[in-house]
Length: 220
Image (cartoon, rainbow, N blue to C red; front, side, top):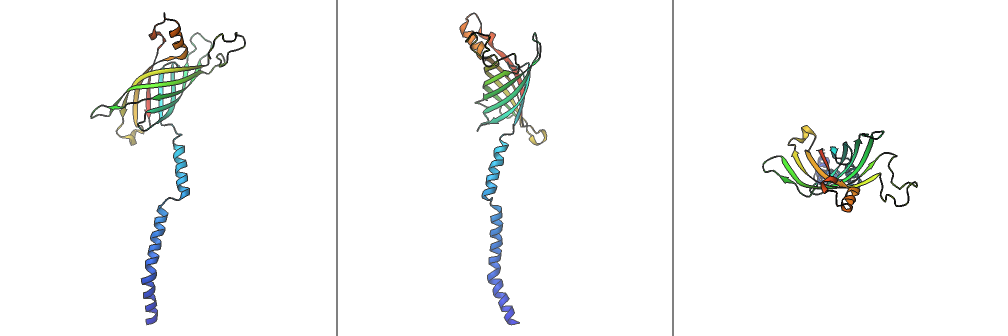
């Protein structure tokens, strides 16, 4: 009996600490992400970046009378934006309504917060965008019915430049609104053909080639 007690005491003093240490090591090993888990986390983070983080509604601006779109805000200071938009163009004197597809890249270098408030001013936005009227009445390559070089440009795709300003309201309680901030903006822009016409015909005033756009951005 005394021999059994002595053996148990030796096992308890020697084996128990190693058992506890082994259990602790296992717990620490479980808390450290494995190589596979790190790889999956990076992959999921990459997929998350593809999810749009803002929505826009815009009126006018050479991409339709009204347009809606979504996009991505990124950069260290959230200074870059990429938008994909679809606009509605009334038929006016044509036979049908038309849709306008737009791919837009914007750069906003500064964010100036109004002291002691949730308001932010972005005094400059610079945008370059390509727009295309989705209609078979417009063409990318000049049809054979015209002499070669008659137009010299595509009637389907327009390149545009614009400058503007924004005022932003940061929403304090994001959890309730599910929106980080709301922006109101305006832009003045011109397309490639209008710019070429302005420099080619001095009788045209600069303000005559400009188009005004106003819009709202919801950053989620």
